[in-house]
Length: 228
Image (cartoon, rainbow, N blue to C red):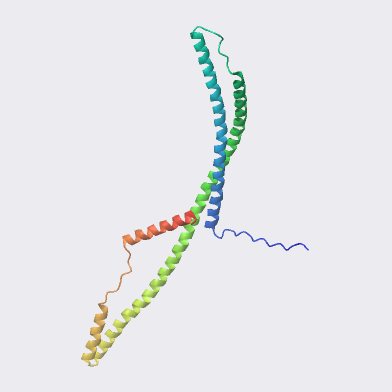
């Protein structure tokens, strides 16, 4: 009997446009980093060709200098002989480096094209990410507006109750006075006057508070953009 296999857990798909944009940006950024490293390695092939050619040129310059010195000093003895074995080795190295450089240049052009394509995609993803950030923080902003409206509605009800007591005292005091009860009416009116003199907080907002809130929104957008 074959052993039971454990069911595969399905991968969790991004739940929101913001999460999808962040995931796409991460994928493209990692691919771009891989291609950039590949381009650097391909450029090393060009450097190897240049190094081999420089070594050959240095050897030729040394041979010329040696021959010039022998000739200008009277040509005594045998003429200097170039190191043919070394020339052969360097020539082989140069041929191999040139072949590798030719392939590397072709591959490098392909890699550069892919890098350009990824950069274009990253630019497009950046626009999608910004739109997703707009949508996200504006939904949060909408929730705050709803809270503000609820608070205003509650404040209106509380304000009515606050002013209602003073109104009740005032109406009752005037009614009592009209009935001839001056003392009781005066007591009610005095209490009504005291209540109307109570200073209630003004729900206004200062410029500094607005600037502080703007900074909070800026930090929130940066957090969303970073994917933290």
